[in-house]
Image (cartoon, rainbow, N blue to C red; front, side, top):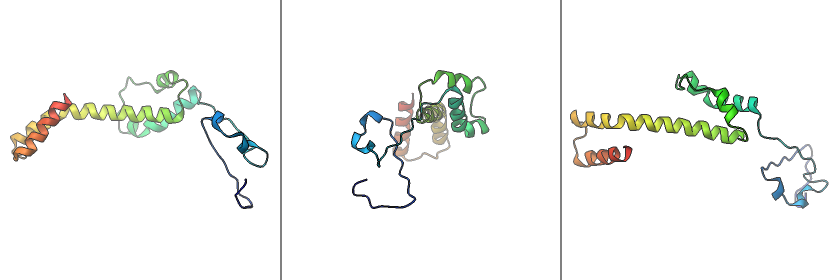
Length: 134
């Protein structure tokens, strides 16, 4: 490539999800002349990606018994690996938020009762949090 010194035994790889946006000058002989398309994962590939990104959840017993990774793999056609990872992360955060919201009121009331939240400012902050969580 112009402006790049000659290096021996160096392979430069470029990746994009927008082939149509690459300047044709980069694709001339001697530059990025070889192209390889890596398509979206098929159903088996999506299942493997789901298994990877839910492994710790499954090991900890945090996935409900009625959740079928095979069904999710079938329903995520046209999802990239990154999108499937994001789906798993979003599901984990949603579950965590629901759990926190469910138990926050009980926890704050218990702290007040045990006089662990004694300063008025702390109580006001917690009451604001309670209102936002419901």
